[in-house]
Structures are given as structure tokens and as C-alpha cells.
Length: 240
Length: 240
Image (cartoon, each protein chain N blue to C red):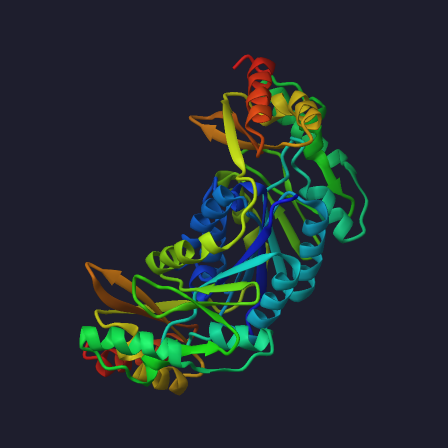
């Protein structure tokens, strides 16, 4: 059976303006790969409701799982929850279960559960909450979309909350061989090698170091024995 | 007149598998922002031809410019040029102008222009070449899609080659204010502040430092005087 597939939506202006360099995509990619869920597409968009709704609908229909980061805080630019509700034609309001979590949290910390903070309890009616052990305000899953915070420590905690509940596949293993030869030099034999292992994915990533061209050949697959045999052949092929 | 809009496609498996953390998106975002071209969407996909063709067609229709990175080298997994040709129903083959560039380059460096390297001269018939001062093999522009290499040094050189030829808008300026107060605390007044400056975009980015919650408020716009006035008001609003 093929592995489940996934897409990620990074929501918010900060990556598009060059202000912030994304960390969550990189983290999620590693976690999903280890669990045997194939991340097939990532998209980042601005805080623009119609664009978010359209993107959610497109990737939700195209992949088994969708993970979003960002836009579920208390400020005016946090519009993700409303967009998700709209994408699935669900209603959204402050929900008692989410409000209770926030109430207990703010009572403990002596802060007021004001109107802005209460916005974080706005959850679509059909969603399941995702636990947030870092800062309490929950994420949620609606249909196949898992909605998480953008702050990396909270995002990571939410991924840890949700991932064990998702059925994974065979973890994708990866081996690499670093060659101090340019891609143009290895491309012919490498292409034939890749063709002879249809069950593996063979990628070549060029680099430059001190003016010399090299290639990292990365071979991915879920069958350890096949992967090991392929790497032996690859090393022999390039005398590495 | 509103600024031109742009989307970026990051092509290749390496980011999706968590192996590589994207650098080109972050670089391009900064360059476009400075030139007054609004990056509205980024997408990353795997080395899968139908998905690349569909993504190119979608973003090409939706934005003024599209920038791609990756997949134009000599190896079997470099399929971007063929996908772009297909997306625009253009033919593709080794082109004399690109071949001449490569021939001169490999003669100078004493390397053979073998079949694999010659693949880098495969350019759609209607495309214009993008200069590559780092490693010669050119990128190209076809209609509103600018196709560039994935190696960061080459990507950056190609961006420098192409950007001056694109009409920009008013550069988007950005000011930020760091507040040691949580978002829940500032969200009410901040939302009213954002509403009173419809020509500016106001974002709030929470952070945690030593267990304390803070917020970076980022205000963006192209009118310096308005931006300065808004920042003065913002500082007064939060006694910062």
C-alpha cells in the first residue's frame, strides 16, 4: 500500500516578505518522513482570506492530510480558524471546551481572559482540539486539515500531539553519497543506475566547495536491504 | 497603481524530505520586497512532472511574475525545463545559443561537453536566456515564468541578472516594534490601530524569551511619512 500523502500550508505574511525564514516546514518535513507520511507539496500564502480558503480546499482534496501553521493567535491578523471553517462550510464560535482550557490557564497565570484571548477559543463546530502543552491555546483538526500555531515551539508541540494519532506508512529511509565530481560528469551512469532501481528515488544535489563542483547523491526508499545493495553498487560505480 | 505580484515555485524533493532547508525562497522574498514586487505565494513540490506543469499553469495565470528554482541541471531528475515547455505548449530541444555558451565554457575548463551537460542547453523555443555568471548554464524566461537553478549561489546570480529587467513598484518598507507583552494583552488596541491605517499592513508575531511572552509588531507600507507617523502613534499606544 502506498504511504499516506500530505501537504503543508504556511500561513502569514512574514515569510513572503523575507522577514522570517521558515522553520516549521523543515521540521514537519523531517517528522513526516520519519513516520512514513509523504509530504508532497508545501504552500505559503499571505494573510488573505479568499486565498487561504481556496488553498485549503485545493490541498485538502488532493492529499490525505494537510498541516497548517500560523494565524491562530489573538490578534486581528489571525484569521486561519475562520478560513478553515469557511473552507469546509462549518460554523465557528467560541467553544466551551476551548474556553475552559483558556480560563484555567489564565486563572493560573493571573492574567485576564479578555476578548482578544477569547478569540483563541473560536473553533469550528465539527473540529477536534489539538493539545498545546506549551501555551494552552489549542489547535484543531477539521476533516483532514490539522491547524497549528506558527510559533516554532508551539508548532512542534502540536505536531507531537497529533502525529501519533495518524496512520503512517513505511518510513522513508535515505542514504547519501558525496562525490567530488560535477553533476555533468556523473549524470549518464547515474541516470542508468536510477532507472535500474524503480523502487528507489535517486536525487542528485550539486554543490560548490572552494571552487570545485561536487554532487550529493541521495537515494530514498523504504526497503533497507534494497537501499543497502543500491548504495554498494553506487559506490562501486563511482569508485567512491 | 498597485505593485506587480509574484509567486515562487521551489522544485525538487530535497525540501519536502526535510533534507535541505530552503534558502532561495528567503533570498528571493527579500529581493522582491526591496524592488516593489509583492511576493504573494510560494509553493514547493516534488520532482513530479504533472504536478509541476499544473502548478506552473496555475501560478502563471494568477500572478504577474513566477520565479522557479531547481531542476535545470544535467541529471535525470532535472525535469523543470521540459515541464515549463509543456505548461506553455512550446517545443523544447538543444538550442544553438545555449549550446554555444556551454561549448565555450567547457572548452575553457577542459571538460567534455557530453550528452548530460548538453541537456542544460535544452531550452523552450520561445524562451529568453537568463545569464549565469557563476557556472554558465543559463536559466530562461518563458512568458512570465523565470526559471532558475537551485544551487543558492547560482540562483542568486540569476536573480541579479533578471530583476533589473522587471518593472518594480514602490518598495515595501517595514518598521517593527518589539514589545515585551503577550499578544493577548495588546491585541485589542492593536486591532483598532490597524483599522485606522488601511494603507498599511500591520502584523503581530509572538515570541517567547526566557519564559516571557512578547510580540514583534511589524508595520509595512510604501509611504515613508505615513509609516513614520504610524510608528510614533504605535510607540505612544504601548508606552514603548
